[in-house]
Length: 257
Length: 361
Figure 1 (tube, rainbow over the protein chains, first blue to last red):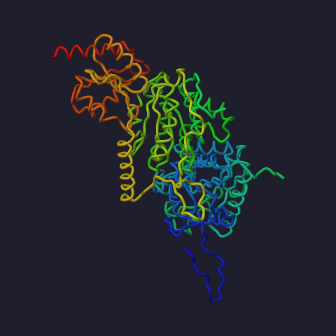
Figure 2: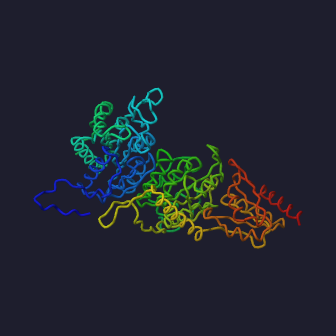
Figure 3: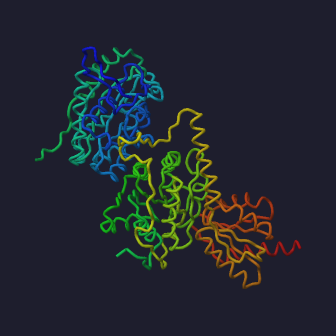
């Protein structure tokens, strides 16, 4: 859809990238997915790589990512997005390939694929949205659910004794030699959004250099499953999620000339 | 060096692997499991002569089938092989590929089950192969080779059918055919053309809408339409792709029906029976799905009895009974758990049927 430029003295400073479709997103108010989709697609547009980018959507809330991203996409079985992305990248090595996965997909059912994809150093970008809960199935415990956090399957709060510890899989991934760039970002304020966009841009640029897997965790929220308003959820995110999942780079690419 | 047909003495697994290179395979993702590990070993060893082809050992069959999904969705000609337990692990991915209409060639070099079972040959995965195998209503196109030559030939045919119908195809064979050595004539490389794949996710160019590979159609009205489309495709496959062969059926009073390895055993039985004056013929389904329903029904109207021979507890016999529709008695002779019936053993079953038929006259 072409939007005619405004003529009454105003200048367009912000608009929808054409790498997003016009389909209204199904995400709940306050959810981080919509913004994460948008900044990723802004980077694809700005780099001019729409015709060379292939995305893989997971099972989870972002299963419909292909309805919103105006690029070629595949929808993977639960947990297997990074294996699907590996298959694409291996036969189309000159394309930009990313997987977009939630915490259940990437760090529970898909842990094996996550570890081995990074360990092989597949030249893909893995986007990891961590909100500590299974959103699509209605708020069950995720591998990243914090201790004490109430979900529909930990109604009295997550306990180590029965459910084990929350998994910092990004720290684990950063130890693997196949990882090129590993960073943990957020998406709940203008500042964090700008930083996330820089991280996505860096990750896609590194992909060209074929130095290994780029892994961008986005510590996000889930107001619906957390039973909070969006504002409360963002406050809770800062006070509880960030201390356990601190933001920042965990691994930077080796310097090369 | 591979520009022309070539005659070699090879194992079935190696012939299948070499045929895949010659059929222009772009990618193979696999995981070791007996009795089919020679496939990936051969592919890895020969890959330097085929630099255009990706051969990757995945961390599991689960990962491997999903790499196949991704690569097929990106337009590549892809193959995966495994045996029993590994094929079971792949079922989710195969169901997704059937729904997303992604072509691929899967080979199941069967071993005895259930469970971890044995590494000896079996035909115990017939139901899994021809009835779908995973969740939902779908079919694979299933080819059953009976020689090392067909292990190679059906790679070409499997790729061709999979791409023609945008559907996974399976070579259903067993550990004996995978391990045995026979003479094989290998077709030249490049003899199988690549069809256009305008649906593939290769990057959205300005001149087209984005391509999406998915099996998710959350509106039931849409999902029903997808299912109706798949069923229409299966009806077309049933109409056009049935393959079988017969031996000495014209005057047969007893009809043997067997596929794969057991069809070769039954070929010997059929000769022994004829030498003893019994009028025995053999029908061998080559495609297990689509199943040769009509040829079996036509012969059932002429013979006194049908004997189905399998290396399982009786799986294809159910499809034979459906085809025969009570026109004549259908008996079953099977061995399980990696045991192979001998021609003489099958002959005994034939003689028992013949005596019974004779007594009734």
